[in-house]
Image (cartoon, rainbow, N blue to C red; front, top):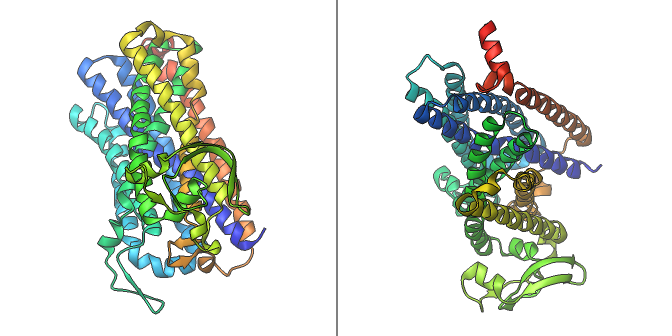
Length: 447
């Protein structure tokens, strides 16, 4: 494996793995805090057990996210020293603030886990809510750093030197808000569907049905917020990309020729050499409208840009199509659930609805990983868009493929450990978390 490819593959693997835990850390504490709020308002012990069960899951995933995030920070310096040499002083602020948010999150989750019956009940609840706020802040701050790579700001590039550095302007660059908004909404959607799918499966197994039904409905509510918010945040993000990175937009749509009234392409197989898309469904003028609210707006095609600045068109296009497809599927599932909730309540307990959520368990994270592929691969060949090429930032150190193999082994091991720990948590629901279960009451009597 070429060292440059190995370095990119290692970053792709690390980011793809870490992004799951970053999103869980942004959203799962809010589910936990909502269940806790329901317990405080209703005094229903099932909600208390649910809060405790989810809090242990948050702790497990928080610890894993801390490990993978630390590995990523080392990889930036190890694999991309040319990038960090120049970029570090410019966009270091969001990383330092992210570290602060991480420490607040760690303290808050400690207070929450060990604060039962020790703190004022509302202060205890706030500690759990603070875990969510700090996790959300961490995710947004990291996205700010990534957004800077897509929309570099806060410096002047003169004669190969980075001067007049303004870290505030760098952090709040033009891509920051669209990326942060879309990422946050996607995190709620992906995490909500995963949690809802797990609890739907356990309801179908007839295990602790009341407990898992309450969990399912909370998670489904959060999933719907994300699913219905994604097209709105995606529209904001797409308009931003069209303005700042027109070549990325062209790759997303496999749009080769500049034209007014550009069509929106669904599916298709792009042929980069011939500059065409085969077997695609084209909806006239819709792409022009999506990027400008004008059906006759001119959209630049890939052929207007130098070939050596093209990203891998097929990868970006397929990833964009995958994101759109699963996003639409989740909106449809959300619409069925809403209709059931308001007009057909008897459907809520039907196996077919639960199976739908079970099947959709991975859809949110598939869409999210595809979206990040669009963001990262669509920026190539630049590591700092329009300023520094990725190949110029890679380490000259040989043998990077062995580092890639080593880190892959670590991530596979972490995945297996997480599966084991979360599975054990689910198995302990009857004994530790569900007060309506006979095993829970027997255990309390013995203790």
